[in-house]
Length: 453
Image 1 (cartoon, rainbow, N blue to C red):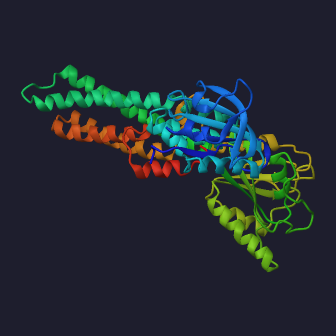
Image 2: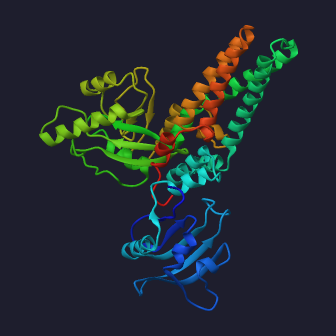
């Protein structure tokens, strides 16, 4: 499958100034030769061009010009996939881009599958599996912090540490197996102490990584924060203030919001999906009833609740019902309309006071959101925070096996048991960077990529 030549549009679909079509494979130059005609004395056919040069010309199909293009030629192995690669830059119209791609496909290329370029980069040793996943994280980054973290992982900082851990465990395993092969030679006390120290260090390192898994998931996926409250307390106004622009319709008429509205904002470096919900009350019609049903669905999926209360009114029965219903959820109580005389007094609960008309208190609310969902300082200096759920699962299995091996070694039991657990740990660690993997795992990872990547 990976011996053929693939092509795909590498830029987003739609109208734009330019579009790029990428071709990769052992016949990439020959395929491009069949449809690219150089224009000018210095332009050349791809097969005649030097590596990493750009040539002006046109794409021709059945004798007719399809588009005026620039053709970038990159010969293996100094390419993204470590195969011959040609990238054709054409005008960014939907029809012109598709016509160039169709011409390449008619010339002998095959349409790439999702993530196939990056998969080839992995299979050809250009990237390891953790770095390949970082490519997707880079594309989908929604904050500068997430972008920096993805760049660290793409640069191989996480992989370096994982490989170092695996090498240490491999060396320990080799030492253990050597003593299994020569049972007459007991492990010297100082040697046993060193082996235990290596395992202890590895377990501690994995604990450090696992402790930051939650922050890594937040950076990668963000958190969902549902804005709730009874009608007309200022939920939509709060959403607009948090986003910095008018997204939701604001009206003094209770029940204006009939559906959930979702928008993502950068809150102190953390991507937060804010969900403006319909006011929770007894519905007055079928449309409002459906809006409330959807609101409750969103609430079930939310990691955080911003419960908005009207600070200019005493607490109501509706407020108390909602306070009790969501008492077990991670939440922040937001007292709105504090520009008016405050009649909602605290019963010991902590409020964040805001005015959604002037914006007062919004920055303090953002600080409260960050403090509630993120432990410690928000920074991307440590590549550990970029581990995803797949890494987390592999590390958890590796840590459990390593701890078993350490316990057996300390107990002076059979070295065969130590070796078996240590092999299991090494195998799980190798899954992170792709040194031990399966086709099903690769299919699952790369199917989440876009066609051109």
